[in-house]
Image (cartoon, rainbow, N blue to C red; front, side):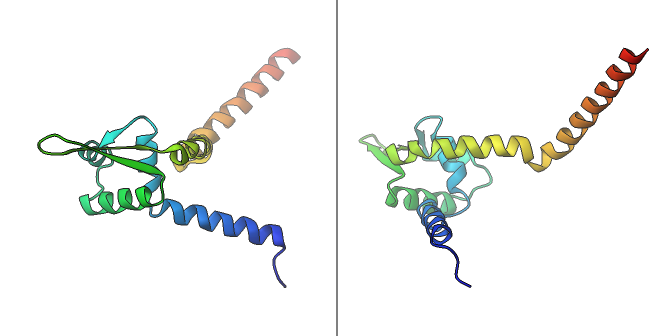
Length: 133
C-alpha cells in the first residue's frame, strides 16, 4: 500500500531540510551562531569536543546551503567571522522548539519530570486530606 500524498510530501520536505542542515554538528553550530557572529576558534572552543575538520566541513556545508555566511576581514592574519543568513535566522524557531521539547522530555529531565509530578500528586493528596479533616 502506498503512502498518502501528504505523508510523501512531509517526508520529502523533512529529508530536504535535513539535507540542507547536514551532519550532527549543524544544529549546535546554528545554536551558537543564533547568539551572534562567531569566529572559527570561538566556535571550536564552544563546541568542544568537535574536531577542526568536522567544524570546517560543517561550516562549509552550511555556507554552501546558504544558512550561514562567512566574512573575511583584511587583517594579518585574516580574521574570519561566521553569522546566520536570513535562511539561518528562520531556523531559530526550530531551535527554540527543540530546546523546549528537550527541556520537557530530555533524558535528564525525565527523572525530574517524574519526581515533580509525584510531588504534585503527594501535595494534592495532602491538601485533599487536610480539607476533609
